[in-house]
Amino acid sequence: MYQGEHMNNGGAPKARKTATLLVAIVLLLGVAVGTTVAYLIDRTEKIENKFEYAKTDVTVEEDLTGTEKSNVQVKNESNIPVYIRATYVVNWVDKAGNIVTSVPDGYDYQLDKNPNNTWVEGMDGYFYYPTPVQPDGLTDGSLLTCTVTYPKGVTTPEYTLNVEILATAIQSEPKDAVKEAWGVTVDADGNLQPKQ
Image 1 (tube, rainbow, N blue to C red):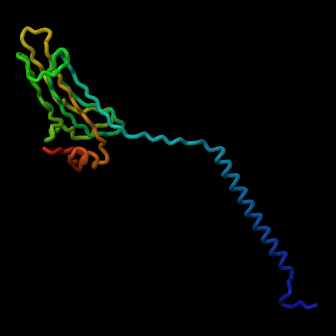
Image 2: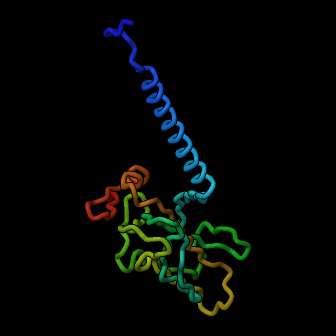
Image 3: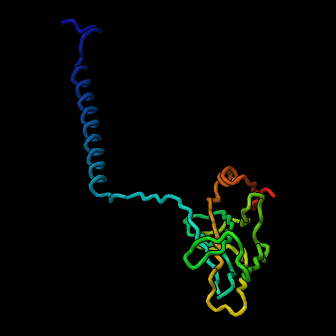
């Protein structure tokens, strides 16, 4: 018989063995990876991501003693640092709560704005607290002090002075937020500089 170079010397069984070995390895890897993934999915505890949105809120704290309002501060009730600005509205009101258009005879008041010089007065009628106030923090110094004078001999006045403090806050970061919303500048140290 002819045993030349084109004769198959048992090459087919060797190729089959190699192919069978490769298929077995691939199947073994598939089973191992599948088992590992199934184990991790079954055994790994779920993690819940909770995101809390930034909120801004402020309240006014003040001392009232009969005829004087003092120590007017603004508290940051937010969950982030904020810039704060405030203004005030002064009105005489009668016993029914109606605003009186002119100062009643014998009634007067003395209002001192920014007595501690801790606020910066802007051209727009607002007082700006120059640095960010941290969550649950208070502004330093008093926005104002106000003392009322009633007519002599009056124990129950017909009119009372209503000094309402209006305060707002905005997030301190990014700096562009306060710049755009309030038209102020912020220096390199983070201090507000309103237009004056």
